[in-house]
Length: 404
Image (cartoon, helix red, strand yellow):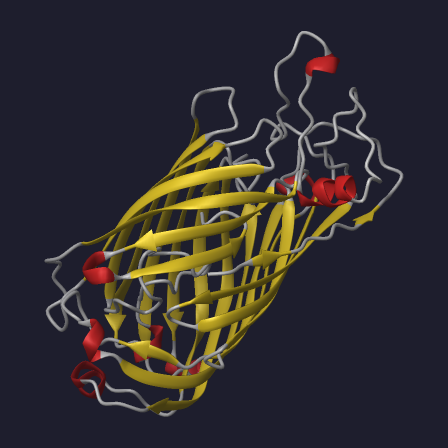
């Protein structure tokens, strides 16, 4: 398996004073000369070109107010499920005001094309206004996405795979308003439209549940969020939880009336305290609570907003009206300058039996990964993970930014 990464950083500067945000710790030292400068891919490229000069007293891990930092990462690779992959991953990070009072904002865009003619173009953003008064969340995507589906419930088998091809537009928008320092409440609108849905092979569950040539899900969303993280790109500590209630309504041109609840809980510990290592926990519960959602809107492995859930399994491997998920990961620095890191992770998922909706089986997974710093100021990493699941399930998973 071959992967190649290149990264470029651009900075747009303003005449705002430099300040050290709370989420950008520096190594403890008796004097500033002992501080270990952090490095990213740009520093490596510059040093190879012999144009990079190190300053022993300059602390360069600080993102100034008003500056926008760009990371551009072309990636090329190969996996068993998608063949050859080519992608361009673009991430920007910035503070809209005083870093002591405002969380870091980020915008991420990708273009992904695979040997099996899968196309994905996502645009995702988390924008924080002054003093964290509003958090504007955007998730817009286009998919041209032939993929396998394996039926419903925890007993589906790999040899029951049925090829499905479709096009999909996703427009998800939420605006959160600060209630207290870390608590937010908001509303939004979710729109999912799939068309040209074709099933090449027969699968008993798909035929019984129903799969129309097109489907539309549209309606309001209510969200409650508690977030004490200071950096959502690569959290070192803090707590995050959200509860989201979604309604899809026929009167808004949805295919059917249905409602879902998603509960997302994440906790981060700096361990050992004062280091750059993190122990992280993630619990994600995705439930259709009433009505009948279109088949491709059902909870499914790897179809969370970050398409990160279930490392070790093919995307879409398990699908059902109810899904429970738990993961833990330990993230560690391998070099003092922060350029190279590693992770070890384990996860477990359970989908309900269908149509009974009770839980009887758990699918465990786990693996290891490598982290390469592409932007030391926002702490954005390229994440390269190899995961294992049951019955020989395995795969390579690549992401710009941490999985959760």
